[in-house]
Amino acid sequence: MCGIVGYIGDKKVAPILINGLKKLEYRGYDSSGVAIFGDNNLDVIKCKGRLSILESKVLENMPSGTMGIGHTRWATHGEPNDVNSHPHISNSGKIAVVHNGIIENYLKLKEFLQSQGYDFKSDTDTEVVAHLVEYHYKGNLIEAVIESINEIEGSYALGVICSDCPTEFIAARKDSPLIVGLGKGENFIASDIPAILEYTREIYILEDKEIVHLTKDDVKVYNIHGAEVKKEIFNVTWDVSSAEKSGYEHFMMKEMFEEPKVIKDTISPRIENDKIVLDNVSISKEDLDNIDKIYIVACGTAYHAGVVGKYIIEKLARIPVEIDIASEFRYRDPLISDRNLVIIISQSGETLDTLVALKESKKRGAKILSIVNVVGSSIARESENVLYTWAGPEISVASTKAYNAQLAALYLIAFDFAYKKGRLDEATYKSCIKELKSLPSKTEEVLANKEIIQKFASQHYNAKSIFFIGRGLDYALSMEGSLKLKEISYIHSEAYAGGELKHGTIALIEKGTLVICPVTQDDLVDKMISNIREVKARGAVVMAITQKKNKDMEKTADVVINIPDIDPLVAPVIAVTPLQLFAYYMAVEKGCDVDKPRNLAKSVTVE
Ligand code: F6R
Image (tube, helix red, strand yellow):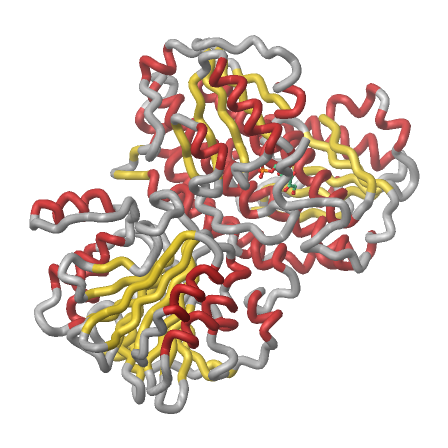
């Protein structure tokens, strides 16, 4: 996720910016840059790659200014390269902008600004902000920023400086984090506390649509209407390591708490006037009519997202879907032709088996659509259509928020394909979109219930073997729940389709065996209740995850984790969170290294 640092004061700003950016490296980045005011103009230094490259460029030609902004970029719009790196500069060279977030209406704004003679140099959404601020700038920088953000749709944390205004800079935020650090004769902005902790422990935490005017001696915060807002000072007591995790004990927990945001970031830029518009994807109705079968290919957690994808694409678009593990697919001489669409799913975009499966499919003439989290990664570069998940960098080895974002992307694809194929009438299509929009707030409700799961885990962390049982989409979820538990708590576990129990597995159920049952599919609730009764009759302890409306579950399972009432079709997006929390708390109780489980790597670039 992009990182922002800004400083205004009496000290040389370059080392402060570099130092602050180093403290934000944990957020993940692919390029970095600084803009520093000195000698009546802005010095901009930026480049692709490690921060050490930027540092040596800055040291070579150390700007002497005492005000500036710095940025580490995690690419969203436009691949990682020098030009796309931030800061972005307006055409006159007067305005410099750093940004974290996604400007959803950037194409519309870009067209308008081009019609006003502005020349664009990068592929980013951010560059529109630099030109827009310049367009509105009539000598008052804060007014220009307020006018600009009134026209911007999407999420942003912004730092804006102007060479006409060497004693002030402006920052603003909506749906992307930004804090202000309060010093003596100096002030700061940053995406996150670690960047400024060395200089001050007094901060303002900005709320959505707040705009800040900073000078070296003063900080004023305004709302979007220009009225001043009185802020309370927050005194930071955390050390740097907990500050990196925003106070959470582990990155995994921090990332689970980012799920509402990543779901929103993945969905909302793709909904325009109540219609799904998939950027970077050109698959028309005619293309879909020419497709006999879709293959979904991925590994691990991404594969489990694909299993949900199979169910929903088949159910909604009525196109046959085969789901494959990449390492199997690549060696089984798959029956792929130009009448197939291959959907590749990968968080890192670098998983070797998945990449080779993609290349193999391409060679055989298939159309490719990839769901990828890392812009410019190998899989993204190889794919003719890429739907990015906007989950930001995932640091914990066990994938959580990226899975939710993959599901969100798959729902967009399923609804879009079904609509194009004429399988969804207008009213159903609209209600599907409404359900998608409700997912972030419903995920927040799920996260708020974490203590019940924590308590259950504290009572059962010594379990030797745990079963996950579900039907339909809940079976797909069970696979992911089981993997999460295994990888971070090292407890053996298996996922079974409810109907398979009787065909062998039930022999393993004995007194005290833990069984976890997601039960979110209305038409299968009764079947699952029977399964739960069967295992309970043999002594199992059952934790069920179900919608609030399924009151009978209280009488059936030992512990019930309620999720908000939700259309069963989209339930996996929110019902996976209790499973992730369960795995997390089991691992914590066992004293495991949650973020770095043994034997595992975040990106598997070998066979
Ligand atoms: C599990 C996990 C892995 C990955 C798998 C694929 O928590 O993270 O199972 O899902 O290695 O990785 P990507 O999605 O990067 O291709």
